[in-house]
Image (cartoon, rainbow, N blue to C red; front, side):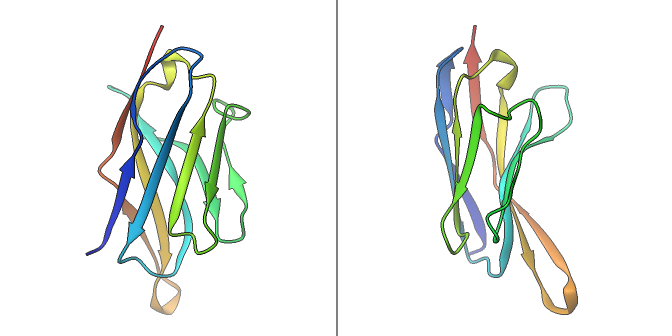
Length: 119
């Protein structure tokens, strides 16, 4: 079964930490994994990406506070979130991009996990 399974969301006070994890199953040739988030009334936005070459990408809003890591096969990815702020409250979605035949790519999404940061 093709799926991305997230874990680790929850409620934390401002300044606290949470760690999210995501495991891919049934997905082959993953070249990028990462996390996006969506707050109520807002568009989904990038949180962190990691490639099979171990390159990472963060927006300024989380740089220095969040760290993404993945296993060598890029089948699991974790997001360590420190110094959380109320504006980090959102549903966090695991993301994976896989290479298909003829140079095509396909995007996969998890179901999402809620992160709530109280002030």
